[in-house]
Amino acid sequence: MSAHFDELETRDLASREAALFGRLPGFLAKATAGAPGLARWLDGVELAGVKDRTALAGLPVLHKSDLMDAQAKEPPFGGFADLSLLAGQRVFLSPGPLWEPQGPGADPWQAARAFFAAGIRAGDIVHNAFSHHMTPGGFILDEGARALGCTVFPAGTGSTDMQVDAAAALRPSVYCGTPDFLKVMLDRADEMGKDLSCFTKALVSGGALFPSLRSEYQARGVSVLQCYATAEFGVIAYESAASDGTPNPGMLVNENLIVEIVRPGTGDPVPDGEVGEVVVTGFNPAYPLVRLGTGDLSAIMPGASPCGRGNIRIAGWRGRADQRTKVKGMFVDPRQVAEIVSRHPEIAKARLVVARDGERDAMTLHVEPAGAERPDLAAVAATLREVTKLSGTVEMAEAGGLPNDGAVIADQRDYTK
Image 1 (cartoon, one colour):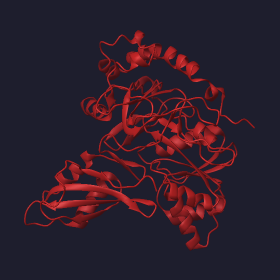
Image 2 (image 1 turned 90 degrees about the horizontal axis):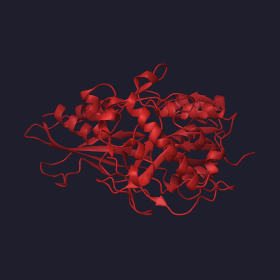
Image 3 (image 1 turned 45 degrees about the vertical axis):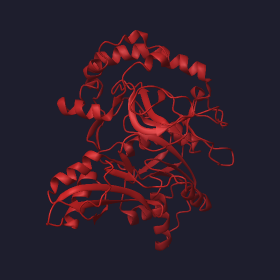
Image 4 (image 1 turned 90 degrees about the vertical axis):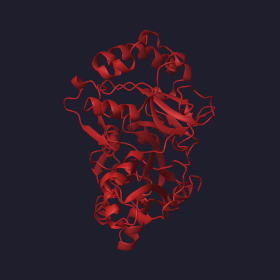
């Protein structure tokens, strides 16, 4: 049985770089012809000269706020999609809001490699607990697992008891979803007297896989690896494991992507090992994004992975370059907090705190009153859920009680435990 998904993974760095940058000028020429928004963004750039990382670093970094502004002016995609390639595909709406089209072909988000690296093979049954509603998370993993030859149950989110019943009947060997929901399922199965020992492997994303949680899963007989994915590119990087199942250090950058780590607020690449913002260039003809700043922080790790895959490794997620924060697999943006405040004039100021409740993400919105009228906390909680699509609690702060530090979202999770 092959230890790698295909021969692309075992190329040396020089061969991979030559192949990627050999493709890039021609791709950019075709992409700007089909996506007028991208053409405007790169106006004045000599595309034929973008043949190496130095030339690429001279292009501007495209931030999601730029995409949102472009989409607001020219809905739905701001001119950054090739509309001629969208027939028969899906379109998604991610928090922000941000419209994103699915690319053509099987496994357009390149998730099959991550499944394979996690020890998952054709014939495995996958319980897919990512959302299939509006956002592409569920489809990213669905496409990859089916391309690998797996059978997929699209469980979606919520309805824990129903998901436990379904898994107990179907007996899937693989879970994919956010890191903490598998624990919710396993704990609930114990309470219900259901046997979910069928789960032996898992591929998780959309949140932090804390070391304590991974150890708990290992003790319960489930080998869990994680991947780093975004709606725009799919799987950007993924973990591999040693023969005994121990995760290898770092996360391997996926094939057919160019990943840079730049100093936040600039487009300047940082030295290997230094933490900076993850910037990605992809080769999706339907949604050609060049130097998109993800807002996520990471670093390039030195050396090669012991698994034999030859691509560069990143050190995993190291926080956000902005205040946009992922909670239960969904991004929450400062603009959404501002919208909540605008809907409740009795609120003067708000601060969303994200923390851990056991092994699960939890968020609390702290609000200051604008005057004598006290906000209706239940009504604010309902608005919080409507705007973010996530549940959370709301707590009252005294007037002037919130820190005057400009932070709208505070992530208080400890990622080392």
